[in-house]
Amino acid sequence: MEKLLLVGALLLFVAVMAGKVAYRFGAPALLLFMGVGMIFGWEFINFQSFEITQVIGMLALCVILFSGGMDTKFSDIRPVLAPGVVLATFGVMLTALLVGLFMWLFSGWVGLTMSLPVALLLASTMASTDSASVFSILRTKKQGLRQNLRPMLELESGSNDPMAYMLTIVMLAVVMHPQDISVGESILRFIVQMVVGAGFGYGIGRLAVWAINNINIKNNASLYIVLLLAFIFFSFSFTSLAWGNGYLAVYITGLVVGNHKITHRSNLATFFDGFTWLAQIVLFLTIGLLVDIHDLLRPEVLILGCAVGTFLMLVARPVAVFVSLAPFREFTTKAKAYISWVGLRGAVPIIFATYPIIEGVEGGNLIFNVVFLVTLISLALQGTTVSGMANWLGLAYEEKERLFKVGVPDDIKSNFSEIEVTEDLMDHGSTLRDIDVPDNTLVVMISRNGEYFVPRGNTEIAVGDRLLVVSDRSEDELQQMYDSLGIKEVMKL
Image (cartoon, rainbow, N blue to C red; front, top):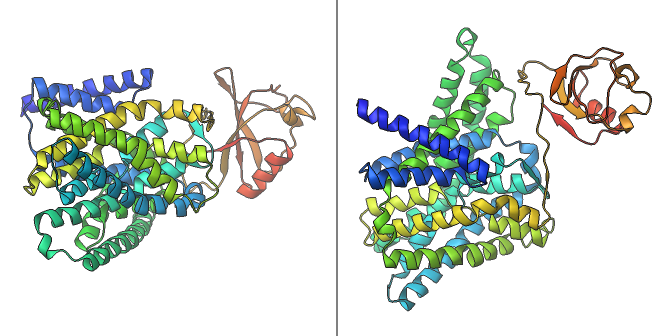
């Protein structure tokens, strides 16, 4: 046991250092986490348990999806809700169909004949974008995206796993027991899974909000974290047992919790930020340990993996995006091209690719290795160019980092916001008392050149100063005040 803990600690340490290197050189940290696992698995650790990997993947994805939903503001995704849902359902189905047909035709052309059901099974496992990869890369990059692209991509990646999961399960049944498959039954099952998953996710999310706000355990605030963790796994397991989609339920539960007032929000957010990183590190390390590098270098894996990866990135994903978003005129051609490029594959396709092996599908190992290679290609090519592609397409803008790291409890009704001093703000003078602010509104701190200080009424202000403002006014009244003062950028805390 001591040796196991020592190896685990070393893996985590090396993974964190790899993440630091990845941030410095602009590479996806998750790719290096997986690389660390592959190196240790190749040289030191013999780990070949697909069942354990599947369990770890399920637990980690629950945390990742919940945290992603909790960090997503519904006000941000509301404008892109319809296109996001279409892309997460119809887009995934179209991607799987195109990749499956290509795989079937290409495998026969190069002499690696693969049946159409098996080709569609392989395509189904990699049809969805990966929430862990998308959340990690988009939120690590200090870069804003125009046309609501960030909430659009996060909504799609957080909600399209259920569709890929359903397609994988259906195609697995087609391959293993074709005589028992009914198209009508499969469609009905999908509808039930989605409706039950969404309904239970919302209901459990509201129950979690009520419990956190009404169960008085303030004498030991850390137990709120334990309580919320219990709701996460309850949401997944109870929904799955009720014939719903647990992954969708967990994401919606997080979305509900994150968009309601809850006690100790700051502590909960800090914990889940770190815990989500831990889940991602453990998940990608485990996946890296599972793969055999010699299998990846087999000719059939290299041929199929490179061909499918190229087709998926350059043909299937763009076609699925442009067709799915055709009815939505708010997205420009450049925006659709960027959405097409940020179709990152990651842990989810690899976890889904373990199902054929566990079920004993002929060629299951080939499916797993091809999916793994496609994921490596996606993370290496697409993951490293997320920022560059946004700049090249003219969709990026500099996102200012919040300077005042203030954790405001939800039971405090005052509004905290951060603004930057502009020329318009100083029209009536250069001291703090010259700013025309309403009653019950105060500037409580100023940041200037990396230094912070509490101001007085006669404090001189300068263009570029950042002000921490607290007000008992409503958000609408506060926004009207900022508009009248010529403040265009307001960061709410």
